[in-house]
Amino acid sequence: MFFKKKPYLPVSSGWLFSATKLVNPFFALLDPEVAHRLAVSAAARGWIPREKRPDPSNIGLEVWGRKFSNPIGLAAGFDKNAEAVDGLLGLGFGFVEVGSVTPVPQEGNPKPRIFRLPEGALINRCGFNGEGVVAVAKRLDAQHGKRKLDETSRNPSSSTDEAKHRGKAGPGILGVNLGKNKTSEDAAADYVQGVHTLSQYADYLVINVSSPNTPGLRMLQGRKQLEDLVKKVQAARDEMQWGKEGPPPLLVKIAPDLSKEDLEDIAAVALALCLDGLIISNTTVSRPDPVSKNPVAREVGGLSGKPLFNLSTNILKEMYVLTKGKIPLIGCGGVSSGGDAYQKIRAGATLVQLYTAFGYGGPALIPQIKAELAECLERDGFKFITEAVGVDCR
Ligand SMILES: Cc1cc2nc3c(=O)[nH]c(=O)nc-3n(C[C@H](O)[C@H](O)[C@H](O)COP(=O)(O)O)c2cc1C
Image (cartoon, rainbow, N blue to C red):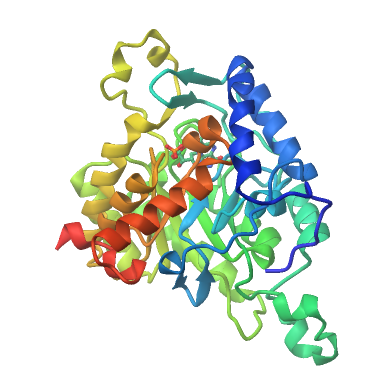
């Protein structure tokens, strides 16, 4: 993928990543949403370190025909409006997912709507606050240029460096996570609009049917509803004129609060419709111990971070077994170390995402997780990361 370079901080080696730890206590004093806003602005301006060290070779992999230099991605919700994609990829994430993006801009729920818990967790009820698909498309267009649509294959004279990188796996992979507007009565139309406006910028697309803060959204995970929705979105994507590389893969992001029957239904739909992947999982509406004892736990919203790890990893394992390892899964929920990422991979994840731990740990966490993951693989005798996918489910 091609990104225009911004004037980044001149130093890019390890000490600058470590130095960012000094800022964490200051951020912890701020309201979580203010701290988040500052972090996104800093990343958008390039006021963050840029990773120049190569990733350990044993953590690189290819998924959907695209090369990932490492499997650690930034989950949706951090850069909802695609303001800082280049800066965030520059931190060394293997991929960054923007959104959720809704067709029409939305304020989201009243503030405060993000709450910290001492257990390395957050509760949020943001409610898809965002600038909407048109603003996000304009930003991606200005920053990254249009990709994938047939234009470069029809116009060979445009084989500049930029054109060569379009739609190819470059230093960073961009996921676009689509949501629906709160008051919209036709969910499928919302996702289709997202596809029409944003899919030409995406290395992969996500249908998010699992955020707990949009009334009725999670109902779309039901067998019939999901089947209808995925068919409509796939059709909308496939109607577009794609170049040689074909359309972006389509994934569905699911909740961790699903019964065995729900999971079986989702697996059946995913296999029948040849879905390209599942993201497991979003935040939970449950309050596992020890969080339940904290008065903040009574806040309405989705819980993320460490207390979500076991729940989301168990669901991941179940889904890996149900889908017989045939569909790439992205493991998300409570990852805060290389060991956690490794456990997700052993539980069936091909790729891993995090959000909350990045909020607490800042940029220094990313190289640390990658190094720890590489060590775990080496320790257990895996030459390539793909060898470890799902080993705990066999
Ligand atoms: C403040 C906040 C906002 C989020 N917004 C979105 C969103 O818009 N779309 C989405 O699919 N997930 C959203 N998420 C969920 C994360 O992408 C992720 O699935 C979840 O936080 C679990 O990962 P973690 O424990 O590493 O944070 C949000 C999470 C947080 C904490």
